[in-house]
Length: 109
Image 1 (cartoon, rainbow, N blue to C red):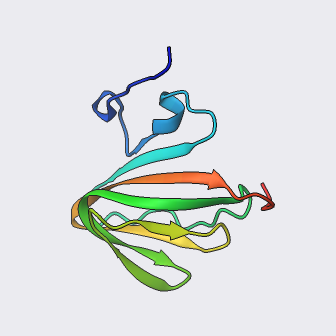
Image 2: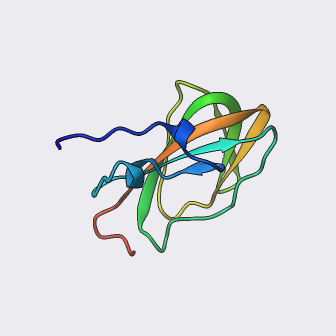
């Protein structure tokens, strides 16, 4: 088949491995559904060498990137380089967001 389809409603938990469930081979994509004021895991992507694009889908919140705060809301896209420390914090109504990642040529991982 030349395409695949999933529905995130068919998955349980905070993280939906979108790309994996679609059987994508070159793309990493995960949807996260955070409760109100939920704080995500602080991390970088040095080991994987991936840069990531954060795409807010519903709700609001913010992304801490190397100590700077970037607001998250639908329609805003944020690219984060592999070495940057990042942490998502959901707003008072919660936050659903998609993270798309790919390894940067020449980066470790």
